Image 1 (spheres, helix red, strand yellow):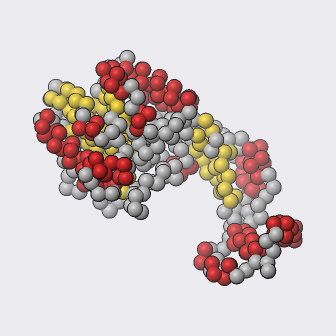
Image 2: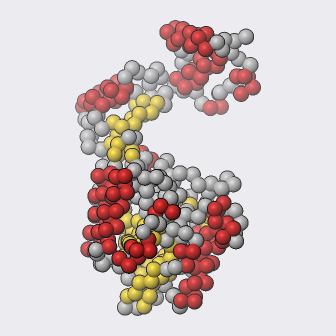
Image 3: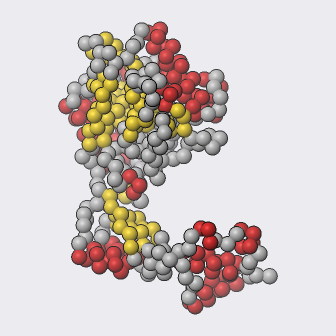
Length: 389
């Protein structure tokens, strides 16, 4: 049996105020076409369908179009909510849609309601674990207050249910931060922190014994190691880049094959949707000269990091004059002092606001403020009535 694993669509999300809706719609159409071309039995979406609990109308329309298209196809669609979704809102219409091959698993009771699909070797059970906020589900699952505890409790329920049904090939969906072995998971700037009690992750060992665990939450495609186990635990990654920290990702979906004995193989299918991302770093005049000589990929979205010690005037306007797709600008002055040279908090508290502000500017630029800026600081402090006593 073949199926496709994807996650973290974040429908309705923007990239530095740039609309992504057209690319998200294009991806959803490509996904169904690819599933049909690959003769996949199902597509599983492991959470963060929407970018927020109250998604914009356009995002709801995209999901509506996608669900309708899958319902007319021979490909089953299985969805679970992530930490960005409202599980209750996402579940709307689920009982009706199930008859059309669209399956929503959005609550704790749904964890033990597998979607069972068959091939020439028998049945495969697809179990969906929604994002489990420990504070919300620990009592219902009779578990401690941690991500690992509630996931372990959910996994035990799945094992018991699969045993009762006689299911030997099991696919589990989950939305969580899972660690395995000694390798560090690759995180991105666009992922929301889900820490509880200072701990965000859970061990991959929770899923030991299942054939494949389809994960969502991390936006980079990656496999989580699980020593001395045949269980494959993997993140599909997001279909589009949602931060410049993802600019080197090859966005893909996972085409998963599970044979008659339960052995799993995974092939990454690159997603031909979206735009490239670039990052340039240097002082403004050098970058402007570079752009005039060789603008590079002008279609790619661009982030610029300026290293000028003194912030230039109208930098974004000037950059967009040569790189019109510049959408993000950051400042990292080349002369900035290290954090170890920052004055201790106690000393700063004994200084007046004027000196603290000037120290702050020197810390970030590597140079004392000039006369114009010094006079401006003096004027602002005086006007605010917060002069040193």
